[in-house]
Length: 338
Image (tube, rainbow, N blue to C red; front, side, top):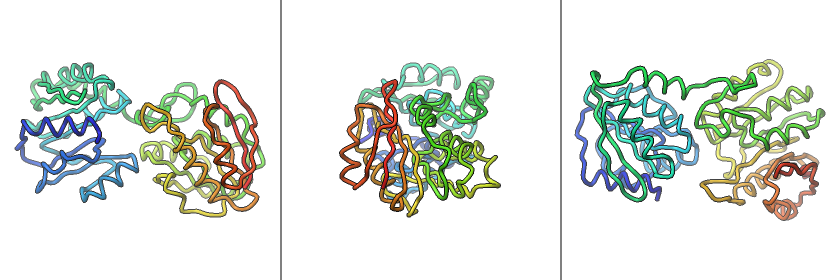
């Protein structure tokens, strides 16, 4: 079980929140803590598709966003500090007067620092520690609320320009404030003669898609698959200039479950290789499997990966023929034919 969820559950053993109104949980994950809110209206705000589907499977209501007022807001910290601060500010803005904000944060996600920042926002918090996590909480009192700080955190979590580009992104998205070096390297090796119907798997905020559309005028249709809903919002804006000439499809979808499209002419991707802190080659293998399964005979896949990841065996096992186009800066760019 997620340690932040476990810590929250232990915390709720000792603290019952009876405030009126709905409960809003930011970056909610499955856990035993949810049973404590039986009979109350709970909105689980989750933009990552696998977690959203897992929550929906438990019968709770899942939303990608909500402006609904709440009597209790719970924030799960993420690895993006700016995103967590944004969620804390959103929670404070949506709470009823006297409502409670509860934050659960792993120590290695900067729990101590986040606790201090939350105390600045609310004018004071209390703290509880368990499972190498901290749960801290405080009540909304308008007289103590630092509204300037809240406004700053709200701005910091919204869509904003990526420095040195004309693209936009936001915290919570992979490589949200820079072009990932692996994607940049792959972009160098994308050809200018891609044509027909293609897909970008794990499309993020659309950097690779926009690169290939700017380079290959014969692309008629492009499917972007991305598990993070926030990334798709940015991708729609970043690709808006091509909407009149190319049929664009934006899918909030977990690629590891396979693709709902077939007979693609080409696929591009920079597949993830971390679910947590440790490398998980299985993620990349699942992306390769999804890509090759959906390509038409003769279609091609272009992808980038960390150089040490052993994807060649996966390619051979799926009857694909591939070659390495480049190896640089710890990455390899590969082309695979179906």
